Length: 237
Image (tube, rainbow, N blue to C red; front, side, top):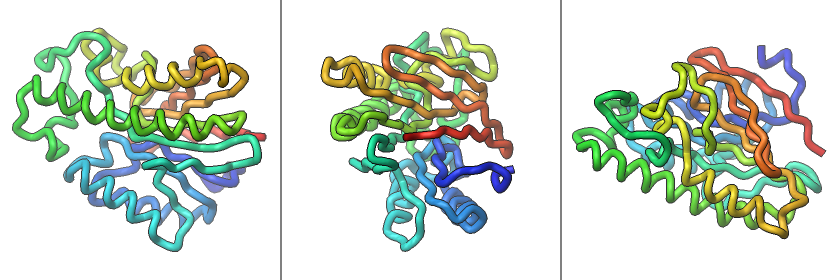
């Protein structure tokens, strides 16, 4: 399917594979398409491993003489004279809805080593800290990116309430919305100096396609499912 789509670069918003295999899948994809690939990590990319190890693997890919790039840590990619690309991994940060792990839980907590053996309050605390760290880093990068007219932001978990595969409830939103990142995006995008800028947010995680406009932001949420990625072509000037 991907070979039949016209494009000059690829942006992946996470959930490439699992900790032991996402790098291999990226290399295999590059061998097929031979265009630059930019990516962030999703929660599945930490499965069967640790968060730190997966991020280390992702950053090491940047050191290889190959056109695959991790959008982490102060990276602003110039796509055209007017458009740039930045990214952050992102987490469902338990700041939306009602957190009750007896009613709704996710596989992260038994498949990512960082969460193993944690009590519910510890799980919530770690998720919030991870989300805050990513949001704070992206905010700094976002201000630099505002030198461009059109800023494309790649992340994994939607920073807004979006449609969900299993019908959204107050108990699922904590794991399907990144409120910390949403707050930082709003702070920067509504600033008077950025009122004429265009912000395009690309994300996934929910397995249900959605499109939302808010202020001068547009959110494209992919409807990808396991082994069946959804492709969206975005034209930039």
